[in-house]
Length: 84
Image (cartoon, rainbow, N blue to C red; front, side, top):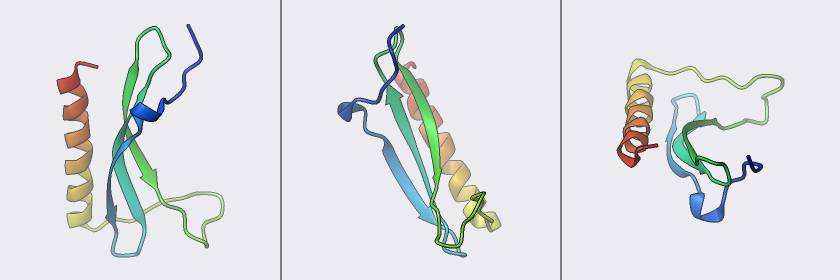
């Protein structure tokens, strides 16, 4: 097995949303090639704020949680359609 790395053509697809408290959450996909079998994953990036120290977290309203869930499910479905 070769070391895993992200190729420029495998750039992540991102769909961001900003919470009421100002935290940015980005949902996307990342395809890692260079393996015997390429790997595709759903990603969740939580933006850091200047006041963050040891842990990054986000609080969501019910509507924000539903929007986040919809984006996560859409990315999972896209991976399944690609057959990965």
